[in-house]
Amino acid sequence: MSSSLPGSDADVSDLLHRFRDFLGQQRLRSTRQRELIVEALARSTGHVSVEELHREVRTRDSSIGYATVYRTLKLLVEARLAAIRHFGDGQARFEPRQGAHHDHMICDTCGHIFEFHDEEIERLQEKLVRERGFELSNHRHELHVKCLDPNCPRRSGA
Amino acid sequence: MSSSLPGSDADVSDLLHRFRDFLGQQRLRSTRQRELIVEALARSTGHVSVEELHREVRTRDSSIGYATVYRTLKLLVEARLAAIRHFGDGQARFEPRQGAHHDHMICDTCGHIFEFHDEEIERLQEKLVRERGFELSNHRHELHVKCLDPNCPRRSGA
DNA sequence: TTTAGTGCAAAATGTTTGCACCTCT
DNA sequence: AGAGGTGCAAACATTTTGCACTAAA
Image (cartoon, rainbow over all chains, first blue to last red; front, side, top):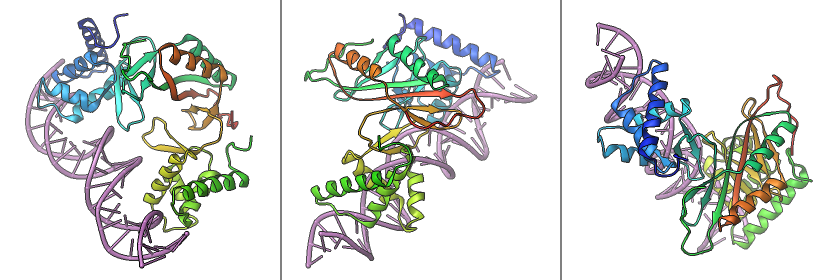
């Protein structure tokens, strides 16, 4: 259970290593910019927009451009080390791929994003898909919620 | 079960009436353009992009602009007579709101979109949300699938 | 040294808006 | 007559791309 919201040093170095391996295999280069971006992603809460990531990385090296952030994120997704998510608001968000699959519960009152996972639902999905003669390749399951309590409970994680 | 893929005459006139009622209540006007757009949406397969709708409507009146299509769709969503969906591909898709809620199964091989509904999953979602002290206001559940069979089975509906 | 990567600015996309003109009611 | 609607083009927001320059390997 190393991989939840803030992103520990261990998470950072893990992601960094995996990314370097991927780059090596593809005969691509590891660069200072890529390392900074991967590090920022690994340290993020897991639902960062490109803008947020760019802003963060700029505090370390103010010359890094948007294009490099986009290009590096695309590589990370290819490497299956990050996942791209589109919530309703028109901009993509990225998260370091944390081993196990999970889905999202989004509080529309306070904007917080929680993660959840339910084996029973996963099984039912598989069943539905197979019944219709398909193979499940991917899925997205978002629960948009409201907290009635005026002070939204910001408990973290699953 | 009137409301599935192609959109019968009855579906068209139903949606048209509801939209006229909405416009009346809001002191807004019914126009030739709006009627054409609503009709095209009602006749659609239920997952049309703005571009497709615009193209369709243009065959009836070649002067209708994109802006009017966007504005009318926004009204329909406000009226809760249409739903907007964002699948992964960067453009919004719209569907006439067909009474009962349903989710989507998207074949990434042939691009076809099927609908599904599973009460058991709906119940589990509710449970998960309530356990965490929230109220479910909305959800999105998409299953991305592949058909192994080279000729994708295009069976329609649930 | 060679090939890939970077930053910038321009282009591409999808959507929204300002405005002069038009049309329902 | 007058509020609201339309079409167009320009503005926007996000993401992608072309290109000259830089830097890993």
